[in-house]
Amino acid sequence: MTSSQTQEIHLWFAFPEAIRDEEALSEYRRMMSPEERRRYQRFHFEKHRHQFLVSRGLMRTMLSRYTQIRPEDLRFSKNRHGRPEIDGTDVSSGLRFNLSHTDGLVACAVVWRHDIGVDVEDTQRRVEFSKIADRFFSPREMCELRTMTPERKRLLFFDFWTLKEAYLKARGSGLSLPLDSCSFHRPGDDRISVLFDARMKEEPSRWLFWTLSPTARHRAALAVHWGTARAPTLRMNRVVPLMEEQAFDCPITGSSR
Image (cartoon, rainbow, N blue to C red; front, side, top):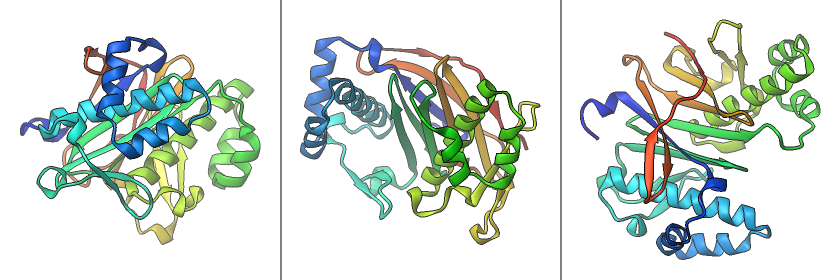
């Protein structure tokens, strides 16, 4: 990354259902590690195999660009909570990334020297969101949900869920921390606020959050531990790995400083 790019967050979107070029798909398979190929083969449904394949193609080609390592030569390890990281101190000491995928969408977030997490969800999937919210959401979040119409309630549920997942992924702790350890609020003026459980010993002002609507059916959230540095620029792109890319724009709401 250049010096200006250290003040940027790059968010790369791929849409698996639109990626069917056999030559490109063959290249994605070729660049996977043996462990990734084993995971690829274990998926029962073709659409999930395809989604996994595109996610690996996106992750490897994008990270290759930043590290100058060939996609097939990138090696990854996981922290004790399962978050993937690039092996090799020469390239990974400052580069941070996170990957998320759901039916119809893959997202890869990349930033320099800041912990980051991204989560995407398909809002059309069947989910008993009221029961999930009762179990995992904070009292403040539940109170906000109860004031919403049924359709708005469903969208707000996915906003809260993706924000929580993105935060936990940025922390690198997975679900080892309870989902109600962070409580989000959407005051209705395009802002996001957060409260942390006192046990977390977190300072809200050191975190930035965004929610996005990449398509009519998808919700996404991004969390980054930015400290006291000036607010970053968020750059989004739509990409078909190895084939094409273009700037991407979608509705976005973010926390303010």
